[in-house]
Every structure is written in C-alpha cells, then in structure tokens.
Length: 499
Image (tube, rainbow, N blue to C red; front, side, top):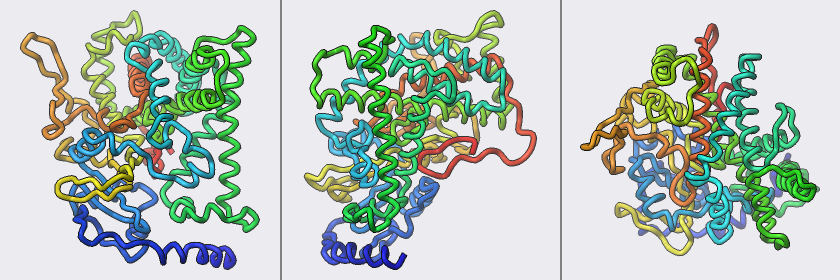
C-alpha cells in the first residue's frame, strides 16, 4: 500500500505544481467554495449525487459551478437552464468529457455513447435513424405485441420472478430487432454477454470509482505495480471485445448460410459486399449500441424500458387505487374480448398519465450523461462565464422533483397531466409551448437526454413501456406489499429498481 502511495505521489505532484490558476476575472456561476488545488472533490457525492445537486440548487441557484482539480463542472438544476444550454446551444455542448478508465483503457471512447462529437458520431446517428424513425418504429409494433404475450405467460408461471422476466423480455425484443436473434431463455449466451457489458459500464461510470479518471497520468503505471484498476480494465476490455465481435460475427455467418433473419445488423452487413475495416468497425459499434440502447444502461441511452417496467410494478404495488383506475379505463376502452393495442393509446389518458409518472417519479437515469463544452472558447450564459472544456451535468431528477414544475413532486399522481381541447375539438395534452412556463410537462422531455446526444431509441423504448404497462394492467393485479420496506433503487447514476 505504501509503495502504491509513493508512486501515486510521484506522478501527481508534478501535475499539481504545473496546474494553471483560473483567470480570477472570470465571473463564474455560484457554488460551494472550492479548496485549493483539489477544488470540490471532497464534496462531490459518489452516491445519489442528484439529491446533493438539488440541495445545492436550493442554496446557490439553478446553475452551479464546482471544480475537481481545476476541471470546471457546471450543474444544471432547472428546465430552463438545461434547454438554454444543451438544446438551444446544442452545437457547442454536444461533446462528451474524457473518461480515462471507460474510454481510453477499456475502449468506450469509440462508442456512440462516449465518443467525441464528430464524423463518427454523426454516422452512428444516421445509422440509428434508419431503423428508429417514427415510421420505422411502427413496423416493430406487431413484434412488440407478440413478445409481450410471452412475457405475460412467464409472469403467470412464476410471478415472483417478475424482475428477471421483464429483463429477459426486453433483451429478447431488442436482440431480435438488432440481430435477428431469438433469446430462448434467461441463460442465453448473447444476452448474458450484453448484460455483463451493461454491468461493467455501470461500474466504470460511478464518479470517483477509479482514481485514474481524476489523474489521467496514472494510466501509464505498469501492470506489474499491482494497481487494481489495470486488472479491472483488462477484464472489462475482454468482455467488451466479445460483445462487439461475437453477435456481429453470428449475423455474418447466418447471412453466408442463408439463415439470417431481418434485423438492424443484417441490414448493415448486406449494404456493402466489400466493406472497409473502418466501416465494419462503425457497424459493430452501432450494432452493440442498438442492443444497449434497449437494455438497462441508463447512462448509455436512457431507453431502459425494462427498468421502467419494473418501476411500474413497484408503483402499482404502492398505489392500488391508481391501478384500479387504470384498469377500469382499459376495460372501458377495450372490453373483455381482446387485449389493448397501440391503436387504443390515444383513448387512454389515465393510463398515459400513469406512464408519464413512471418516467418522472423514480427516473432510472436521474442525471443525464454529462456533456462537455467544446475547447474552442468560453461560453457566456446570464452574464456568467462557462469555461471552455467544462463538463455540464443536467440534473433531470432535480427538474422532475421541482415543486414549481411538478407540484407535490413526491406524490405518484397520474392526474397531474390533463387533457385540453383545441378550437376544432381535438383533444391534446396541456404541455406548455414554452420551456419558461411549464407546469406538469411531459417528463419524457427530461428522460431521454438532451440536444444532439438525445437517445435515438426513445420512440422504440416508449412503445415498449406502453405495451408492457397496458398488457400487465389488462391481465394481472399487482398485489400490495405484504411485509417489509418498499424495495430501494441503487444509489448510482444508473439506477436499477427493486434492489
């Protein structure tokens, strides 16, 4: 231990000595007072950071500046600040911050999620748009309706295992769309490797989990020194490589054998007979990105349909009166001779309110994946200077639990979302047109990321949540908790329900 400490001190001390001081003339947003050199590192929470950020918001305002070893971090606690910077100025806030462990050492810096803004990122977005546009997503709806029946059968057989069944259901659906792969059970090899990558990433992005993210120079420490993060990086890298190569190779082999089913990856491989190495590299990442965009990795894409369905089950167990109202509406619209379909959705405003509350009440991604201001120049916002290279964090949980935006924010209340009527009699949701005057807006505005980094799979994810919710309500009663405390969410930036 002493040996590692001495090595660390020898590497870090020169960096500290040569760190340049911030220009004192800059008028930075308010925030907690930093300590010399290390800044606010000791105050930045590693668990449930969104709660601390919201607390700071009440003390300092909706735009906060903190530092970590001279790295400026901007925390946004209001809808207005989030949309002013990440949407209206999305062009200069589209970058991702450097993550040494996940990015440089493991390889996620090439991914659609952590990759820098540029040509490769644009190519990923273009490929996703081909299958995730509103028109294309509608083509997947028959498959979603078929898959949810399989979920219902599993729940009927073993309801206590609902978390595993929901996770398997979403993985099955996404793998069939992405690779034409039919997941036979929860032990499916491709599903297992995808879930392991998902789990690994969740570990890597926990703030402060790896010292190398604070001191990038540590990445040069040789493996023989015994530092644990080097061994962990090797394990993470091997699993990531398997997830990139194995499913993609399976599709290529099936195409050669004439047995490949239509899928996103099949379409990529078949588009060009002699693809370049660069093209195949991008296709592999896009293919894996599609899978993870529908998994439980909130910080990757915020789609997280499975965890939202689990959150729905928890909400119904705690609020049986909401469940009864939603079931009564479904019975009124659908009757008892068939199951709900996507065509019934416009006629179920209360169910729609339930879904919106599931997004808002316990958001799976309480803080959005961090953005980064490009290096070219400082930005100015409300007479404050946002230093170039700043990491920008949107506290989505803080917005969705702001009493000025959502009155009584900790209440699960589907009726907070009301329908209005236009002059020609068409019913529409009463979402305010301006971000400056919203009360009880659709929380999906804050659930899928922002600006040029918004989740490309949000329509598919939302369809999956809707079909799961209405089918479970139509077929089952979620029983109340009979003993013990309600299940708790994990305290990290990626939250899994019911643990």
